[in-house]
Length: 100
Image 1 (cartoon, rainbow, N blue to C red):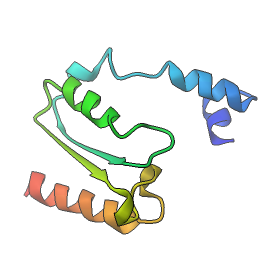
Image 2: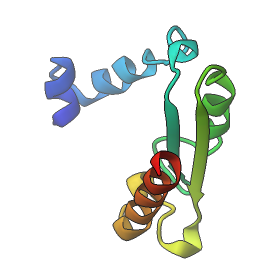
Image 3: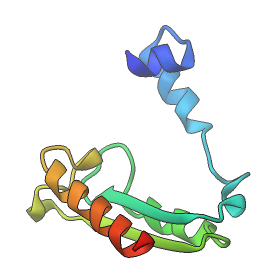
């Protein structure tokens, strides 16, 4: 329902179609900030190898850190569902290391 509201659509399948058109490709080289990418090895929406594609495109980023949470940690699902403490720790550790 959130996707339908966000895209102004009234059909869940139309949301899937709309999301297929979204890409960072036209702007990814304009990102100059430090970047943290999080992924789950069992993500049912986004394949975890997508993180490598995004990292490769971040050619002008100051730094790029990627973390893939594995199944056995409990964080392998989309948005690390069920293991929020893992991604919280990863984010806060990254902030502390990156911005001192």
